[in-house]
Length: 132
Image (tube, rainbow, N blue to C red; front, side):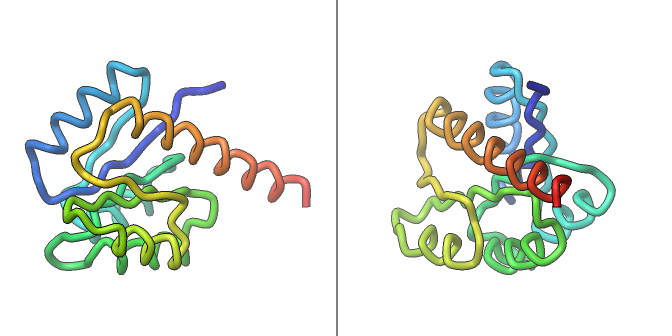
């Protein structure tokens, strides 16, 4: 199995650095974007398996960005991040096509487990597209 490539989208630079280092130590290729528009621009040029997407960001919200990702990139799975202690944001993300959600703060191994599951789902979608 090839390495998983993840795009982490969050407006907190320190969080992006930290999560990038921790995932890289676990053999995940990590790219980062500071906002929803930057993420969409990145995805138009580069293929990733999974997007980790913060719900609340300036400009395009996480939900708006999710809707665009679902519209344009059918095989990419999205895991929503919410740091506001409410599962409501996560549920809203799921209703708009997110694969999963996780509440901040989280354990890196919990996130890694969700990334791996989302990646497997993404691979299955790609395989079924190539067969049909």
